[in-house]
Length: 275
Image (cartoon, rainbow, N blue to C red; front, side):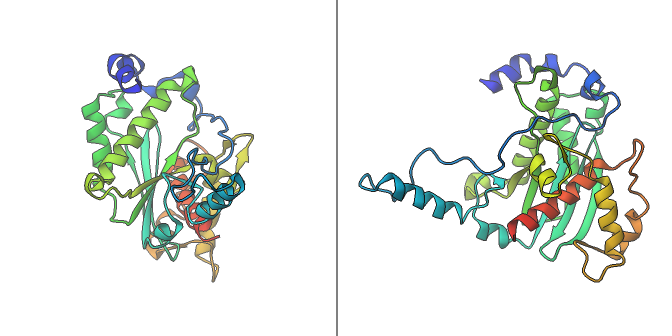
């Protein structure tokens, strides 16, 4: 039903630059609605190995045991063991103007950290073929990784005023799932996962109300500490430290919000995984 609506009427929502909407004037990141608990929803069906003779209490114990082997902070469902087996991840955050990524390995060393400006989408040209050109152009620059972690926005599709923004984010998200999962039809195994934006905000305690606030100040401190502390929270290659130490602006329009969010998302992923 959603696809039919998108095909028949979606262009009406995208007939003008999405970022020119009055809700974005004077702010880089739209206000987000809280999405409540960040743990995965329980499966309404009992596990296959629970027979009708089991009591309800037995089923609950089985469900708790199964959930202990799966990562509750990420979607789609995946075992903790598989996530921990990954040598590196590419953390990806995207918005109305750009996409950013951070390549981080299991030792919490950042080896690649960049952003990509939308070429066509920034000009208000949101045709399907141009989405493909912009998103595939960004993907072609990604380093190779075992897993790809996307930011999942908490914007509600029921919010009519924000629907064009939500639609844009969902289109980009769906295209990334498709482009980064080229072997899924044969292997039936995901390489792309989504981590809630508010999950990251709560992990770093940078929430105001139900919304995650800017992480630029926090990332700037992490970069500075990486250059002076013997055991910093996250490591950078010397090239990245020298490149970004003085380029993260906590004020003004050039705040590198997406880059900072991509880095924090990668760090939150590993810390939640190994907590």
